[in-house]
Image 1 (cartoon, rainbow, N blue to C red):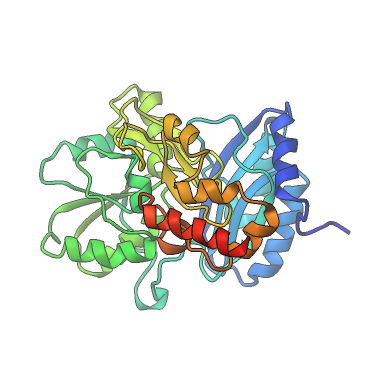
Image 2: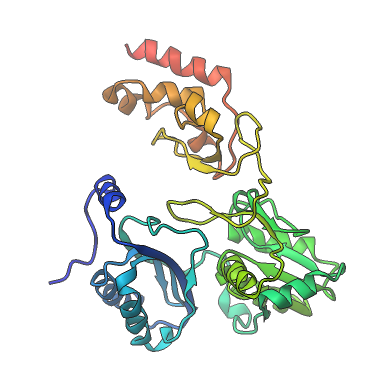
Length: 355
C-alpha cells in the first residue's frame, strides 16, 4: 500500500536533497474547480505525485487546487501527462520559477483546507467567475503607461517590500484576507478607473478581481499568471520589465531576482539588502531581511537575545522557551522589531535564575 504522508525528519530530507545531483525544476499551478470530495482527491493526488518524485506544498479544497512543487527534470513530461489525466487539470498553466536550482522543497505535503487561498470571503455572496480581464505582459505595459491607470499589489507587505511593479499601490497588510477590505477602501472613489491587480502567480487576483467587480468597480484587470508569467513573457518578447527588485516566493528560496535594483534595507543595520531569512532561533523563527554583515554578527538571528539563546544548553533552551518572548512570538510575519537591550537583559536575568 502506498504511503500518503512523508514522515522522515525534515533536516534529513534537506541534507539528502542538497547532496542530490538530479536536476529539478520548480513549478506552480492552480485551478478553481468544484471538488466533491477533496480528501479523496488529496490521497489520489499524493500517490500520483509521489510516484513521480515530486516535492512541494499543495492545498486542496472544495474549490480546487493550489500547488507549488519541485519536479525531477526527467519526470517533467510524465508530470504533464499525469495532470492531463485529471479532467479539470488538463492543460493547466505551469508557471516555471524565474531563478531556480530545483532545491525549493524537501518533502511532499498535500493539505486539505477550507479554501485554497484564505480570503475570508463568502463565495455564495457574489459571482466568483465574473473575474477581471487577464492582461498579458505587453498589454499590462501598454495600460500601465496611462497615468490614470491604478496598479494594485495584492500581496503582503513583506512580499512587496523587496519587489513590486513601478508606481503600484502597496497595501500594508500581513495577509490576503486583510488586503481585500483595505484595497476596497483605498479605491472607493476610483470605481471608474482602470485598475490592474497582480500577485505572485495569479491565484489571489482571480478571486480579488471578481470581488472588486461585485463591489461596483467597472474596469478591473489582472496580470495573467502573475509576476512569474509576466517576467517570463516579457523576457521572451524582449520588452521592458516594469517589475523592480525581487519576487518573494513561499519556498526555501524566499525570493527570485528579477531586476538588479535593491529597494529594501536590512532590518538590523539599514544597509541596502533584500535577502529574507527566518531567525535561526527555532523558537522565534521570525521572517526578516538581513545583510551578510549582520548575519555574521548575529549568527543568522534577529537579535542578540536570540543569538545568546542559541548558545545555551538544549535543556535550558527548552525550559526558557516556555517563558521568554522572542520577536517571532511578539510580532506578526515580517513585522521585525530591532532588538532591545531590555530584552537581552531579561534573558540574561532569567538564565541566572535558572542556573
